[in-house]
Amino acid sequence: MNDPLDKIRIAAPCGSVWDEMYGNERKRFCFECRLNVYNISNMTKTEAETFLLNSEGRVCLRVFRRKDGTVITKDCPKGLERLKKKVSRLAGSCLALIAGILGGIGFEKALGNVTFVSGPKTAGEVDEHRKANPFTITDGILENLGDIKLSIPDRKMINRF
Image (tube, one colour):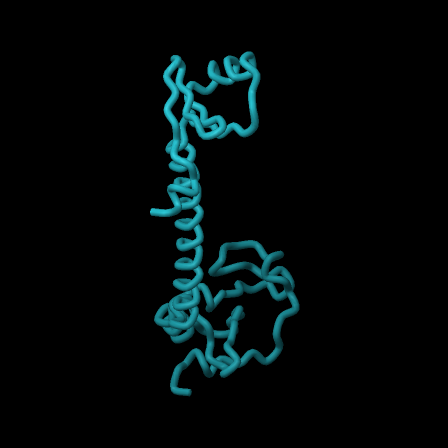
């Protein structure tokens, strides 16, 4: 315990709520004790040590400790490692989401105006369907706008190869 931050002892902790105090994330004013309260966890280790060495008299601090008793600072290596893991997980999730969206868009564009229709159609229904979708597959025959019909190989035959 040679670290000056680990020697911090708070004799009588204040009951005031940090979020109800006026100020910023580093320093807030406590209306109960009429003192500034300094947030050590929002300072780097060097800043916190310099602050403690230069301060005189009574100082109010907001301190967070690990289970082993060490004080948590802004540049805490374990905290930074946890932050890096969170950021990398978030980035990975965003990348997967973007890849999924782009894959879906690409799949839709690859299909284009090809529509798979099942069952027999009457002449009127096929003509209406052709207006909206120029290329359709009906009962194994690829139909185009003209009178030309191209047969598509049977699926069983395709699976042989």
